[in-house]
Image 1 (cartoon, one colour):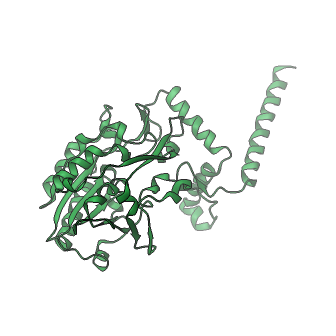
Image 2: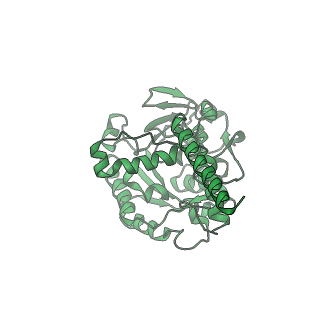
Image 3: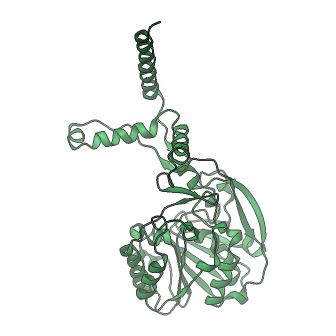
Length: 364
């Protein structure tokens, strides 16, 4: 067989493969979600004259073909392997590995966003918290604990300074030195509840409730866990384990969800089979909940303005308070709070991660 005939056959086989692959992709059912990435996948867009002229159809169709392609997860893994091992890139889609932990780049510092958080805290304090003791803390993301280049690691000192210079009459509780990279999950953004003793000691000492924390906790391993980052950077890593710290006081406490109007336990074990197993802690992201300590020896109350990191830390405060109210203003407008809460001489803690502080447009 001569070279010309070989080229014709190879070309024919290649074109046949492309056509068959294209047809199979068109015929296969659309996938609803990407479980690994925790997001909905793009649907086939509707072709209209307007969308064609504006160019939106082309953009949406490109996203559709990327999301719905056959063997999509395998292609994503292959792309990551090539990026790291062939081209020796430091990151893939702003994700990178450091000491076995998957980390998402959060840089540069968005000073306007930081100032926005400071202003929101000031407005909430002025409107509701004039007779409350108010504190705030900042939870560092995993980038803080790396020694990577400046393009990966934002200016955390400046973030702290902006907050301290602009937040009025609130005591800052610095927990940066109470944490290390090993205190966070390898495959997720969040910290490990079982590693938060130093954070608990610092906050309880500053806020004056350390002497009310007298009962030890029992650590219970619940389920293996692959976090959000495992889906965003599809390369092989060690699995994490969701563990909980519990005792008779935590087990007896009840959680009331104002959105569902239902009571539950502190640790929601129905979430073991959910896509995001971190939701085991206080049932995940909800606008407004209260935790009632049925065995309380005090009338003290605590209000926490928080993001998802607070879900795993708040249970460790239960023994010290009669009631703890957790507010997530990503999901509820601050103007509505007076409909649910009577603000009157409670301890108040604003607790946000640097990931939220640097992207505060999501706060209502």
